Image (cartoon, rainbow, N blue to C red; front, side, top):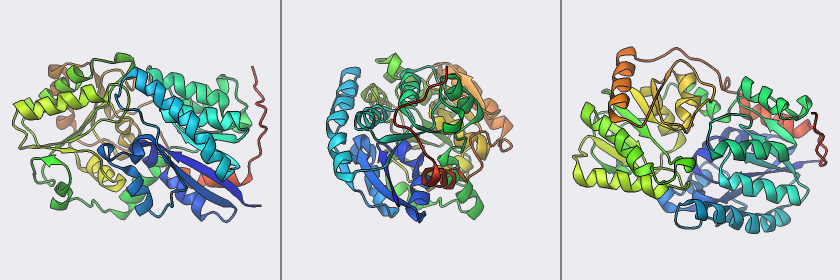
Length: 384
């Protein structure tokens, strides 16, 4: 009998982290893909990722509007509550056999609780990792609810088992985001040119010449510091006087602080060499990572995709603390001089050798195959 697999997509990072698995599920003869779009994936100012999902050939079965305005700790908690109110209705209509949730965001927690109370098996990707922020607490909490685990790296798989999960329920598949990277590199297609600058605002420049990238999000446990943090990174780039692409932050608590810092920078400084994007298609982002002289900020892409591609990266602050990483990453504090010095060192080093810490490019198909054959017990069997 065909199994119905419901994937909940809540953000741009969320989507790139599960896209290859969605495709493999859609193509699998024993599986039926259901897609629920939620949270910032539906909101235009975060790039309306739902449009990309549909353009990639995935029909949207349900849309869950759950994002409460404000981007502060209270609205983050309320958004989780809104998701918990709305998602059960969607699951009740869709009647999935398995719900797939990704990573560690607030919509992940809402998805998890809804599935748990409705006695629906939960599959969790990218669990077991450590970062030192509220994301880590959410991630480990979801692990304790999940029935099927799809960790992306070896130390995460070991940690899930140490948390008491049965080894037979833990499947080390790699990160689906690496699948997209491997495909693009195999095609040897960079997809970059002047057309890229039709979106976003700011200066335009030759992407065949060295340029920087900045992707920096709020740290929820450092709420209120986002404006100062992004300002330090922007000023480091500014004083190096290099062309740069800057991405708008995600919708976590503190997003408005980071956005305000970006707006103020644009008001007071020359941005003729800097171009700001709300969102980029996955292929374009990967191509930029493959070409950039250095990726700066606190996105996990610097650590995951960056290790696979060999992208020189400067990780700023605490958001990715303790996550397993390769030699391509330099860690610095929120200090413009430290950031600029680290960028300079990375420019001097250049591209790194590939380190497939987070997978070999086949995670999605492994996930689909496992979902088609694995069994589970709704009553969790914990080994302590």
